[in-house]
Length: 228
Ligand code: CA
Image 1 (cartoon, rainbow, N blue to C red):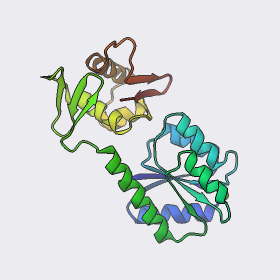
Image 2 (cartoon, rainbow, N blue to C red; image 1 turned 120 degrees about the horizontal axis):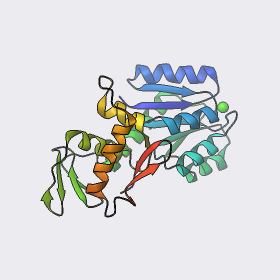
Image 3 (cartoon, helix red, strand yellow; image 1 turned 45 degrees about the vertical axis):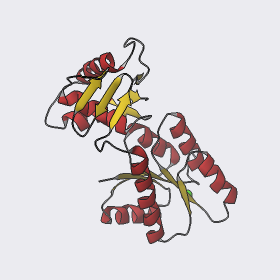
C-alpha cells in the first residue's frame, strides 16, 4: 500500500485529503506545518509527499529543498495557490515532481498521484529479474542470487532483504529502526547492533575498502544510505 504524507495547514483540506486517499487504498499520514512535515519526511519512508507551499513555521519550498539536501528522493507534488506562477517554476526547480493549483478536483489530484507513482516505479525498475550492480556485487533481487567477480556469492536471506530495502530507497537515509521493522518485522527482537553487524557483512562484499565505504554510507545517529 503506497504511503503518502500530506503537509497542509488547513484542517478541512488535510482531513478531506486523508479520508479520500485512504478510501482509494493509500496509507495517509499528515503534518500540519512545515517543520513537522520535514521531521516526518526525515524519520519515515513515504512513497509520495503532497506539500502545500504556504505553511506555518517553514514554507513548502524550504521543506522540499531541505529534504532534497538530505538526500530524500521521495516524489513531491506541490499544492500552489492560484497566481503563484513563479512559485510553480520554483517548486519544480527545487526538486518537486509535479504541482497542482488550488482549487483542484479530487479526481485531478488522484490522477496526478497515480501518474507520479507510476513514473517512479518505471524509473526505479525494482528488481524484476534484472541484475543490479552495487559496488563490486551483482544482485538479482527476484531470485536471491548474488555474484562477486562473476562467481556466485552466497548471501543470507536477511542480507538480501537489507540490501534490497536500501536499494529501493537509494539516495535516501534509512534508519536502523526502519530496517528492523522492514526486514525483521515485529515478531523478532534484534537490536540495532544486529543491523550494524549485517551492514558490516554487506560492506565486505560490496566495498572495495570496507573501512572507507563509498556505497553503504553511515548517516550518524540515524542509519544508512545506499549510493550506487
Ligand atoms: Ca496553506
